[in-house]
Length: 446
Image (cartoon, rainbow, N blue to C red; front, side, top):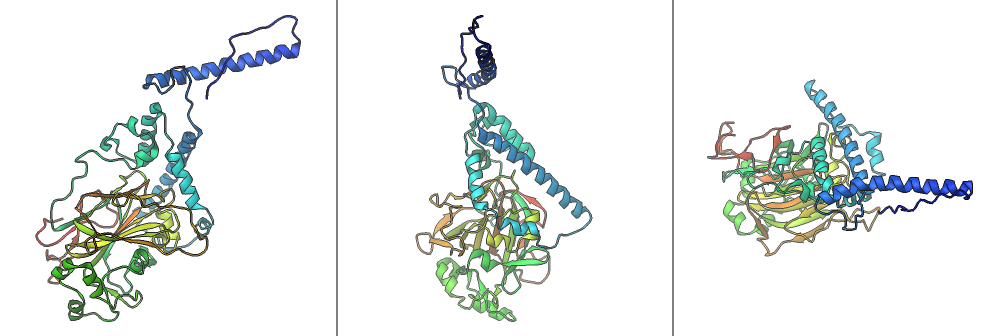
């Protein structure tokens, strides 16, 4: 916006009083407009010519101001929630599931539209002179490490670019042990363990669980066996050998034709899960947890509820109802699936292995739930090969990743037997990309 000031100030004695007053007001307004525009011009010219050669000024866009206000509100709410959680943990209290009125009210809000609007705000180009201050403000609010950023702060033209920033080479070393599974993201461990109960249930919070089948989709290749008492002979009959698994994924899926009933079916022995929550200030890219072949992608266009502590305690089937992208495939020990779950303001999930995928699109149907969109990667039976540590996807701000995988079981019931998979982390631990989630056999002690 350019303010034009008059260089002529004509006050004649014969002018009428009203006309004199009008001329005086115009002169005063132009004087202040010029004073306000001069500092902006000076700052713009000192930053490599952000302003034009004609001396035009560049004022902060309203979208940037709205973004700053949103950041302040998010930071205040996060501090309040963190304080409540820390106080409860110090007292040894574990929150139980308890729906409330606010959770019901969230279903009435157009969270998908709000998230798209937030995406527009964060993608607005910020003036060069403002970028370092804006990035530092975000880092202070959400505890981001700016020293790991691969680029100078001036080169992040928008908050969205800063959200999905790459890190300096060597910032996330990948554990080279071939007998370990590494974390795909930076985050906090919410839940981890072995799937044992009928229906393959994962505890969302104390007092409520959700089905892995509902999370991955009814057509998932999750290795299951018929319900009822399972003995070792039955597991051996249902479970294919490692060589058979490597030959063809379809042979694995067809080897267990009894697993399509999620109510009466039980997980195969050696099926584990890990739920990792990403805070808004965390590194937002998703890396491959192991060398594996990604065979199929499913995109569920669901809600975009928040995934914070309060939401997990008040919204039923939170991870199942939210929009998510599920990748299924095969690694050296069998089945593996990774679910990237979107949240409020994080509906945009980008897959580097499938750049054309678009998430958080307007729904065609308002009432009926849309079936997931599937894509089988070519070549058939091989899919896309990803090495441990490769970048696979990214989403904005914070969200949640659920990893489900097969791993070797102990050959003896003793806890110190190294031949079986053992988690190196526990609930509440902070973990970074490349650090070991668990090891087995000859790997070093966790």
